[in-house]
Image (tube, rainbow, N blue to C red; front, side, top):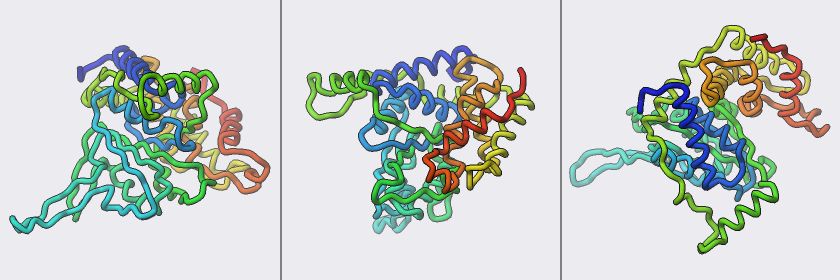
Length: 322
């Protein structure tokens, strides 16, 4: 089903959510925002302490559309070639051959990305932006759809390296994954301890309801959703306000405005709408912008966080009337 209507695409997205929820208990907002990034063709940075189901989420998402899934555990000694791949010399045939790295997949889980130094982190930059990898001067495209889901431990944890700003900007969304509430945690414990050894939630009951081709069709449909000039101007005003807003030391660049519109299109598609509304912009603004701005040191000392400052901007910038 490569030709689909908005209604069909929206229903398929709801099916994907339902299947992921069979494995991932709770975390509805996280699942919703991850789907938005997939449909918008973007990458996701997920921040949270270990053990909250980040790997499970990615495995379940891959299972819903029979996608290829690879995981890289980032460590201080990981080299760029361990991610992208390298050339090997075949002594018998006296030729060079390319051994492709784990980035050649549909969904790439870059686990604890901030455990590796900047040189290794930046090995992901090209594939995140260009959907290709250059090995020994030759470009190799990765399978489509492609999405990097990088997990990051909170920066105050020992042994973490902040991501370079250029790379942070390549992530469409930054998502926070929080501890489950008491009911969700009880459900999770019951699921893990019921007739199985080990402590892993399994994804065996997650069914494939789409294919890589249908995901690509959804992405194409989403990119054609109408963005009225007044709504684009609204997104640009929000992003430009971050550049001289009291409480922020670093503002978002133009990629912030572009990402706001791309994510808002996916939000509209999930609601089977053929146009973006100002509410779509508002609802997705925090995950789109929170990693593109820097909190002023004095605000940090007073206990403020980036989301609170961004919410203040959203409250002040007047939305267009639709």
